[in-house]
Image (cartoon, one colour):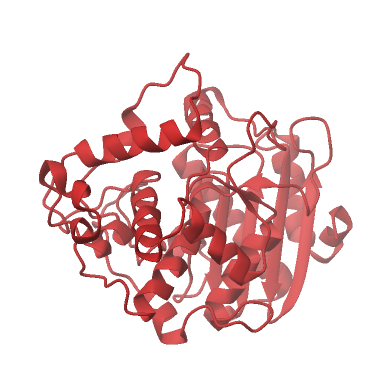
Length: 358
């Protein structure tokens, strides 16, 4: 279903129509599951003059991090990797620069004490080298980075490097290739996103942004184009919704077990409580093992059990077990942090109201 599906969501239609008319985004793609009933919604255009449809590939960016968490869960259940394993015990070169005590738990909770070193690289005016060279550069920068705080004592959200290291850890243990921790999960889940964009392929969407977010949008584009686990995933929101449904049940759509329910409960429980603040923070908030676990950061309408992830200030995955709701949403427009939270709250509230969830 596309725009016509909004007939069942009058509050959502009013909200989305106004946001598009106001230039906040050019279009919205939304996939909803409620008590097993699914709704595919797409309205507006892709920013390139064509309609956005339920099949249009869009960038998931950090909303894809739960896939890496599930890949870890399978290694954890099999006994190949433990939460308190030191990363350097599996990847010795990672221990350089004082990171020898960083644990797998610290990667998953972003408590390595290392600010993301990739965010400081200046690539302006540079031609993108081949992926093999990019991988080598990222690994060199990661290994050289030094903790600014003692590992495990503070959160510093790493959009790129922690999931790069997690993939390297998982693929080293499994004897597979870079990125295969994600590709294997795509196959198990029966979904069809891609890791990065092929070569010089043009992005299928062109999100808009206000002037103050132009630089952030450019950095998001660069990271999304690369086959970076946890950052560079492209696909329809219906596939991201399938990830959320697997988190609810522990199984893929075909019944294949992805992870035990108890393991998923452990992943989505709060492991880092966040620092109490009077303002929203994009770098220190309640976090599980690869999941945002503060329900009110996802939506005021959510139950206390809700969890999920957000990416690029353009996408979000919300899983609410108490309400039997999974929502995967993409806005073709980037906003700053606080307006992004406000926009997500409004969309989640409209959908819950239209579904009759109190």
